[in-house]
Image (cartoon, rainbow, N blue to C red; front, top):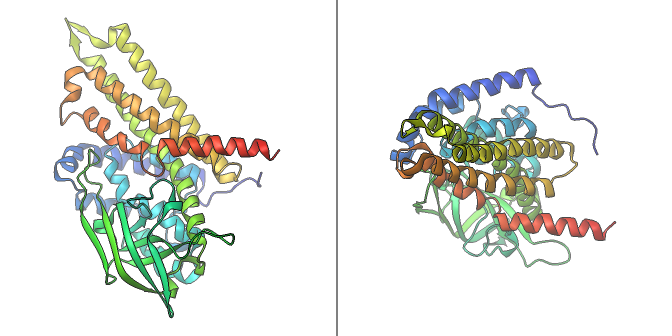
Length: 391
């Protein structure tokens, strides 16, 4: 266990930041959820407000222009982000999370200097290009190749379901430089500007939910980048960078799920207290109360788990099993809470333009991205068995 951690932002200052974010979410974003859903886009004025209060760089270190929040603070904001359309968080999530953290933890000083301040300000949108048609939650199946050619690297391959690809300025691209061997995984990661010749972004995916969060295929055909684009100057940094960023991201997604479940619960309680059946508020019926009780219990358990997991991540106690456990429990819990919310609402819960109907569709993705529930179970179970063998 490491020494006690002193965050860059004090508790007092963070309380102000959280209050500012909560007010922004509830007073500015929540009233426009229907607009986001119908237009499949985040309004430009909301994007500008998010940038102004530092949301594109809240988890980027202060020396690079960010707020420098640690993961225990990150999850508190994520629970606020989850309270509204998940597309809002998606807009700046990769800058702070899986893409930005690759640069923060593995980039050279020159790479950080070139990109991080612009990422933190929102001038640059960074996109994490790992998933492929044949390699998703487990990056070891990667097929995209990078071949050295003189002082350059030439990248060929296809990425799929890449968040923010249609608006990205920078792609953090994972590629195989050689087959895995005893010296390493052979997976590297490269910084590829979106305007690099040979890089082509496909049409926006049509998804079940999360309107306004754009994903697309990204194709690389003889994409040439200089050797300075190799993150950390290390051909084997890719797998470690992916695993490190994903573990941290899983705690963030768990917190996001808790925030969304809280919104579904709040909508359910409000509906149960006001809607009547035969002249009686449905919240007076014990079977409806039982559904609300199950929702509340899941939310409380998820919030406690997320906070404890974030604390253990920051101290270094557990950066593998606990993040997977939190992601597994909280995303599955959010799915159950959303399902109960539709049930509480009855027929109206199945109608478009009703908040819980949108939530029901939105949360389904949480069990899939940044590692499916099945992958989390393998990480947890395998890790426990390995630890027992090594005792």
